[in-house]
Length: 322
Image: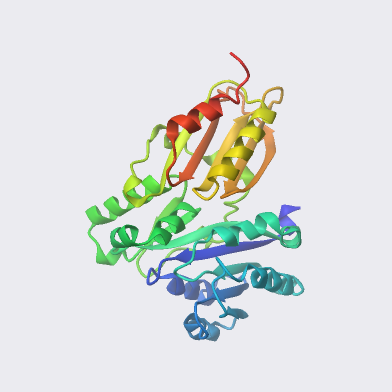
C-alpha cells in the first residue's frame, strides 16, 4: 500500500541556509523524475517563486501566511488538488519559510485522513548554514527546532569554514539530533537520490538506529534542544506503555519535538516501532526480531527541558515485573 502513496519531502532550514539553492538543484537536474512543489513565504510576495518558476515545474505559491502556524488548511487543500493529477509527478516537495517550525507540516500527515490515504511523509530535510549556525542557535529557537525535526541534514556552505569548524558544527547538530543523517555540501551540491525518496518516516527505518547513539549522552543544552536515550531490558507491557506515553505526550508534547523507538512487547515476537511528532504518535509491529537479538527496548527523545531520570523511570515502569 505504501508504494502507491505519493512521497512528500518537507524542505526546511533557516533564512539564508541554502534551501532555494537546493530546491533549484532538484528542479533542474536531469534525474528523470517530476516533482510538484509547494512554496511558502511570509508576506504577499513570494520571493522564492521568482527563483523556481523557470524550472518548468508546477509550483504552488502559498503567500498568505506560514504553513507552520496559519495555513495548514491550505496545505491540505493543495495536497488534495495535487492528488487529482498525481500521475503527472513522482513526489511532492513542501518548502517552508525560513522562520518555520516544521512540526505542524509533519503533523498534517498524521492527523488528516484524506492526506494519509494518498500521500506519505517521506522525510524532513533541513539545510544548515555551517558558518552561521552557532549564531542562529544562540538567537533563534526555530533553528534548533528545524534540526530536531530533521531526518536528513544538509550541512551547507562548507567553503566558508575550516574542517575543524565544520566538525564542531556537526558535533552540535549531533547533540541536538543524533538520529539525523548529516550530508556535507557546498552550494547545496548533494545527490538528489540522497535526500528524496528516503522513506525516513517509514516505521521500518527505525530499525536502522545506530546502537551507538544510545551510548551517547547529549550535551546540547546550550541550544535548549537536545536528545536523551532510555533503554529497558525486560519486555514492555503494551497497555502500560500506551498509558504512560499518552500521558507524557499530553503533558510534555510541546517540549517533545521528536520521539522514536523500538519496543520488545511482552508476548509477541515482533518488534514494535514507535514515533511521535509533538503529541501526534504512530506505531506498528514491523516484523520478527532477528535471531540472537538481545530484545532490549529503546526510545530516543529530542526536545526541551527533558528530565532524563523521570523518562527512564517511566519507561522502565512499563516493563513486565522482574
